[in-house]
Amino acid sequence: MASTQDVSPTELPSERAPLLPERQDVISSKRQFSPLTLLIPLAVATRLTSTLPATTLLEVIQSVICRLWLTSNGNFPPGGEISKDLCAVPEVEKTYSAVISAILIGDGLAAMIACSMISHISSRLGRKPVILGAVAVSFLAYFLMVCSQYLSGWLGATFLAGSLLLQAFGNPLIMMFMVNIYTVDISSAEDRSPVLSAINGWAILGQSVSFAIGGLVTTKTNNPLIVYYICIFVLGAIFVYVLAFLPESLPKEKRDELRRQRLAQQNVEASAHRSLSSRLISTVAIAFEPLKQLVPARKEDGRRNWRVVYCAIHILIAMVAVSYTPVALTLLYTTKYKYDSAQTGMMLTTLSLSGVFCLTYTIPSLIRVLRPIYARKVVLPENQQEPSDTAVSTSTDLLDVHIIFVSWVIDAISYIIASATTTHVSHLIAVTAIGFSAAHTPITRSLAVSSVDPLKQGEVLAAIEMMSSIGAFLSPVVMGSIFTATISSQPMLVFYIHAAIVIAAASLLFLVRDSDRYQKPPQTQD
Image 1: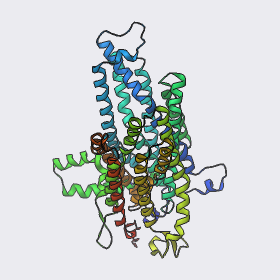
Image 2 (image 1 turned 180 degrees about the vertical axis):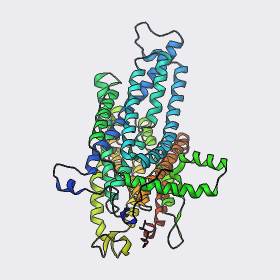
Image 3 (image 1 turned 90 degrees about the vertical axis):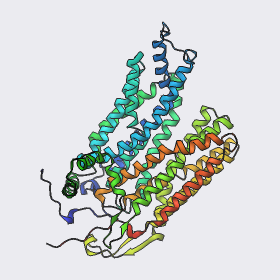
Image 4 (image 1 turned 90 degrees about the horizontal axis):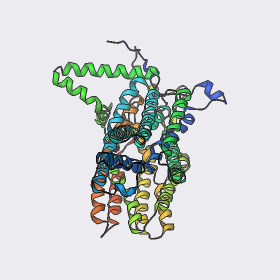
């Protein structure tokens, strides 16, 4: 068995300390930037490149399917120019619909697998190699997509399938998970909520830019591949940037400690289960390893800590409702109010920009103002005190719970208003209000990871994202079926159901208690 480096209990991080503390030379040097500042370009670039191709993806897929059908039937035009009329046949439309459905299902499943893989690999190799790997995968996906447009027949279809498979592992949810897990590593407990909010806001800014320039660039150049060229260039630049400037957020000594804990747990399990079937199940269970964090751990008083379970159930229920609702609103506007592409783009851009303002400015400012109101003086035990500490002022988790609840209430009411109003101006006002409900996403993650040892926060975040992806997978089935059945008779029904579900899910978080927050275990005396 490989030896691991022992880490003294006094060197382990407390809940109040980030995994990657600020170095003195960074603080004292005006020419250096903190890791959080260096993370902003990555957050913007990954969200930009993961959403920018969405403006032309459907057109590119349809083009490949059409060329494959024309080639298979010997109808490919001699000049190579393909008109939409040539592809207006039932066979092409059915294949196109089936491919789109497969993509939607695949994205949800890929998110579950990818979050588990990222958590598993990054805890062993570090966060930075995984970020570089994900950027490289996205780069290759877009390169294959471009190649598919210059190839015909089954070769072009094969390149398209490979591109779509790789893109499923580079979707916005996965990219944001990597940014969040890095942010959690380098943030202290008191600063985690506002920092996660700000980083998520910067990421949405990348999405806003993609909505604004995607359709415009494609229209001006009359080339659906131009967005892929832009993504390839940006991803190449961000790969070099991460490699050269972004520091590792999970240092080697922390990974060694995680490995030591993991080996100790495996030895205990191996002594209890030595059968071949048990070992096989244990091997397969690696894919679902983060979900082990959902098992309530026992606290020192013998009671179980249910906080992570509450957060997981909350996010699962909420995502069932909220994932499909923006699609339903867009479909309502395009069918009932005859929105064109420009109006739809304006609506999505307004939604994103209001979310950016909420996350980068409103929520951090609100937390800064409210923290003294929620703060309480706590005398820490000797084993948890930092040097010179006797008492600390710390905010209760009730602040996070209240922000999440109010955000979901705003979300519920705003969607009802957005579906009930009849003018374009009122639609934009309602959509702007929806953007101001964006705080629930990062704050819920902050609430969940504050429940465990800082070394296990990445695994908890992976478990939360896996539950979120399950909800996103179920949302089109549940909410989509309701909206399809009622769009003609009761188009607002789905939004009332959405409101009831998200408020019920948010109410579950009132079961969260401050006593369930992670506490550093007492030091043992030699």
